[in-house]
Image (cartoon, rainbow, N blue to C red):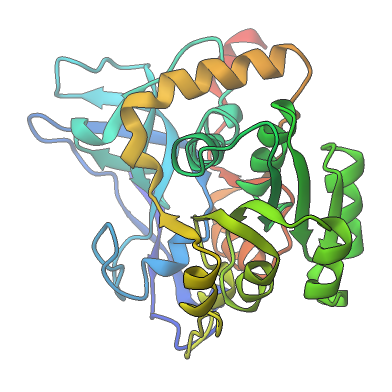
Length: 339
């Protein structure tokens, strides 16, 4: 039996293109003792995928010839580990492929009462990143004025809603008038600035006249530079991503660091969502309650077919997604059983 997979054909010099990937047809792999074979149902598309091509981070660098790694929701097809059974739905450290061999340490069993896309969005990497960044790193308070960049992105949509739910004033930064309107009208942000057509320093002053207590940074670069000007003394900056820099051959940082960090006594802290793995269930319980109370809206951007994965990542890096980006590789087995 054969299956399809994507390899990184060649690492991009600057901007990532669909042509950097190659779709291959290969033999279906067989699990060895202690391994699990999964059928991938949904692949998570994240800006981090691009950073993996630039060098070793919290994982090995992805180089030419490698199958593209991805987080996934998958179904177990064959297990040679006693903890996992055929037919179980799991989240996995997987690949851009129809099937993947996964080590048990890279698998997590999933509850039955959550829809599979939600396991990658609100109750997956996106929502958990937003929750832990706000509460565990940013120490958000109800009285805070919170600004979040990439506000229409997979993490930003939940950062704003979680902060609003506890009483914060929330201002987003996003690209384009359409996204900004959705963030305000559909997600309840107090305001949103279109960075493509704005004077960020001036508009941040208009939206946040008393300054910013907490900034959730997903983009870095000149946006971070502008926000630092409006930070209050002893403000907190949660460093989650730097998507504005991922496609640059010569990344640049804010020119006012360390100056404003010192004079405003700011705290800047970076994190990886798995730093707080032991608190994931607490986060999920918190967000489930908000969802049941109608205080949070799930936003998902699902593209159909494994063949669309490269384009989905390129679109995300160019700001064309709204909410959590993912690719459906196979039908939901639960829906198949019901039909």
